Length: 405
Ligand code: DI6
Ligand code: FE
Image (cartoon, rainbow, N blue to C red):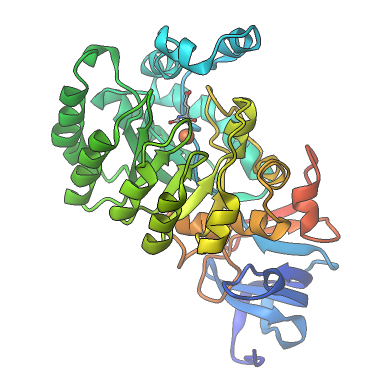
């Protein structure tokens, strides 16, 4: 890029090695002696340090690496209580499904969440959010789904939104009313889905509290047919959809999600070839959640090679939730993506930046270091980007920039 002598940046980070993660660029789009400049929170320059414009404030990076700020595109950060006791039961031999059928699982978190005030939900989520932020996360998705009544689902979404006021981070929310069947509707799944679609969805849409609609399509969740009704209701209200699909069995949820042009289909261990092809055709992101796979000691691997061959963008997220993935480290999720799922270091990094942005419908605003995008950066004390994936339990973050600050 030519030096623009007329431009004056608010701030410029210079003499850095930059992994821009630009689409189509080889080698993570690296720039060896690079600079990033911002005006009003947006990136206005990303290129060679020698071509950089002037700035009011110049930050010398001394050869440190800069990546896009990390994006955790699938979490359940807002919830009451924890499930350490159920973890102990599983260690003693009980299965997740047995615990769920005995009234534990999602329903035990539902009880704790219903009992918590909005302020309590925010307060209990903040330490988890802070752990993510400390590792360079600048955008986080947060789902409802532990209220399972209108009042508590709305309270969860409100609490999620409030996280964005409490910390310098972008929060995207998903309405996951179709997470589990609440006890009030025992024996009447269709009644629950009808209530969710006809009464709650309009309220959620009108409130502006949800950026997307999610569902749990699974044996212990909802069938593909019930999920379809939820998606149709979301579409009627102009809300994009995403789906927990093919985590414990193949219900062909991903293919259904693809027909609704879902932003993402998440988990996908049991995804088959037709499902892969459907995602590829729709441009739907495959979000892999290795923390849940690890914590549940699953053995069936997601079809990474098939996704790769079909050109499906792969994202990685923590799935931070109290039952199946009490994980608050996106760096560790990257390491698991590589070690357990066989992703390359470059795929892991794209999975928490460019592809994660797309999984939130924000591919044109965040996720790469390019002119016009939000200036969300992570600056690292590392020798190479692969180090972010390689270490376990070590945090080399030097600084985190959100919206140019
Ligand atoms: N899939 C999961 O892994 C979480 N939700 C979902 O739909 C589990 C949620 C929980 O057990 O609390
Ligand atoms: Fe989840």
